[in-house]
Length: 212
Image 1 (cartoon, helix red, strand yellow):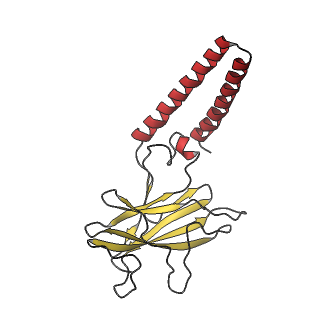
Image 2 (cartoon, rainbow, N blue to C red):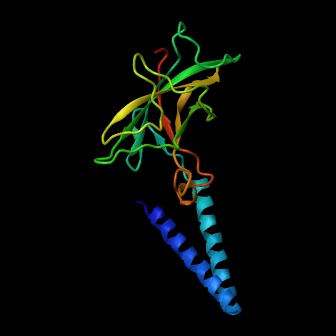
Image 3 (cartoon, helix red, strand yellow):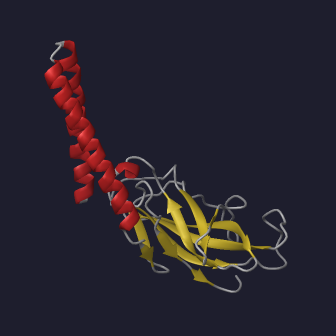
């Protein structure tokens, strides 16, 4: 837990207390206290929102090197490589003029010691060298004789598995990395969190190879 995580928890508790005191003051017709607690609540909300937005806008983007593991608690992802499919392979995405399909290989792993876990809300986009993100153009793919894995598949303690996804990029662009989105709340409201409002999402760079 970071300092900003703790600040969010303390702020949430403070706001609950303020709301309760406002309700009590209203029920007892203590309008002087009602106005005081309301002003305090609104002032704190404005101060917290300002800190949240300024931190998001002024913070530099986090970038992970190719092969470097990124974790949310004990659930982790690693950008392995991106490559175009073999020319003789069956097309995996609908044909679109001026585009090329890239396959992105991602390793999903668990740093947990005891518990089995999964990330049902996780999703991934492929970012090109100009900073544009692209959603997958088809579903998960298998590799060789291995069945396809999804980001949301369960993991045992210390386990890992590869995920293969196809993306469609303009012919003029190459992949730069992956952007993994995992959970919006409460990260959306935590100062400095990767998921906080207006914060640019973390990039996990990925090795680009000319062919599989």
